[in-house]
Amino acid sequence: MTDGLHTQFERGTDGPKVIVVGVDGSDSSWRAAAYAGGLARRQNALLAIVYVQPPLAGAAAFGANVAEATEGVAEELVTEIRDTAEKLRGVFDFRWEFHTLHGDPYSGLVKAADDLTADAVVVGASESAGHRIVGSVAVRLVKAGRWPVTVVP
Image (tube, rainbow, N blue to C red):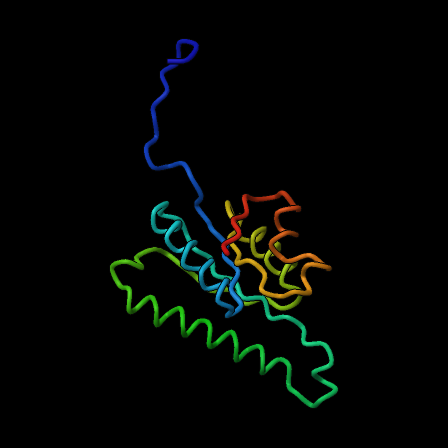
């Protein structure tokens, strides 16, 4: 009772409703997806698995079809996710969807989180040494301060 008003406790309605996880095929991104999947299952939240197709600088100069290469990665990722979901039927029982965006991974994850009204963002720790200079996607997401961000090692 607060100020003469009765308030009813709402069991199970707190917590995230949409969790965005960034995947790129790296080991740390798969660990992040597994962590986010467990969180989504326990919270009865939608898991939005996001792959951002990065621009491959200079690839066109070598005659590589950049769009086909990154589309292939996206198709492999969604196939792996579906195969895992099928193997773990009963454990992997939660709502999920796969999204592919194009461009810079940070900007793509921000756009996905905004468009999906994410309550939380989960990413894997960077495996690239170059990110110590430029800043990893995870650090940039944390610094943006727009959502709770979990960085999975």
